[in-house]
Length: 212
Ligand SMILES: [Zn+2]
Image (tube, rainbow, N blue to C red; front, top):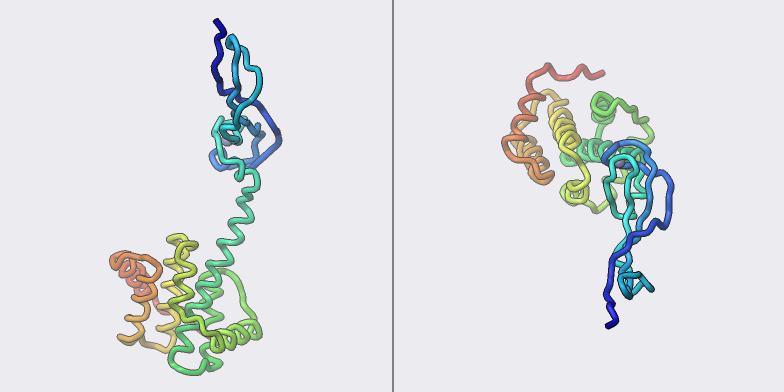
């Protein structure tokens, strides 16, 4: 009687280092391929199919999709940071242009709040260019928020709403239509009313920022 069957066999196809998301550090990895072999008398004779390929961390033994090899946390952080700053800046610009032209005072207020919230400076020229681009663009604030919502974390959303409130308050008072707009921004960013009210309350607590 001939005894035949099949068996999954794991082989190493590549080795190297990668950024392990579990170890949160660079680790050695082995890339493994699992193949089904035709066996005769329990001896694997030839592969019949590839069942899958994965990357295994040598340190934590965690297994990941092979795409993990190109994962670069510092690059991802830079992208998240850039989106966060875009959101903060764009929200303030949209609020300022909502009631007409942006005067030089408002430009200075956006600069001051932007610097306070992101620890980054933005030059007059860059900001004025962005304001003009926003005025000419057909993308509404809500369309922009819809685009950003999945990519901002809670902290970024809170800061974006804080920026909206601060720029609305920069002229000395926040009227009902401005509150309504800020609430719409929060909703659009997927924040619950309680979360949003908490953020607004915490901006209202301290004295308004000293603006030049
Ligand atoms: Zn690991």
